[in-house]
Length: 120
Image 1 (cartoon, rainbow, N blue to C red):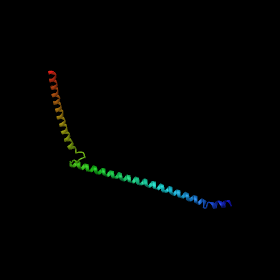
Image 2: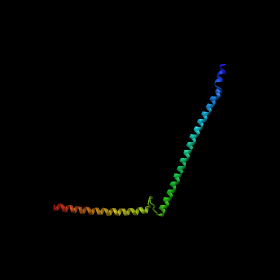
Image 3: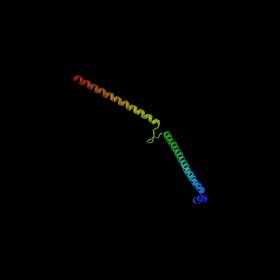
Image 4: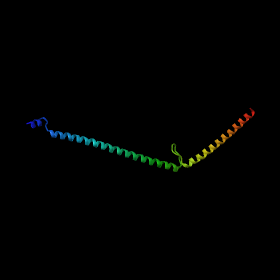
């Protein structure tokens, strides 16, 4: 009789425990699927971004090579080598002229300082 009373107090005792186990397994499975799905989506988005960066890099290199072949210079982009060589020569000549002017001023100052020492 005690067995019968226990069964009446907890109807479906073993079946209720199995249902609870099934629902927790379903919840765990759903969470694992969501995590795997999010990881897959993240990986896919990163690979697409990487592909986009690669294609942009290729386009930029192609445009730069076309500009260098045409000899044109665009603001913000490096000038072709032929233009930089002429600019280097001009810069070298200007530096040489400045050095000569500095040397002339130094000589003039020396003559002025010698003249003052001799008179004083």
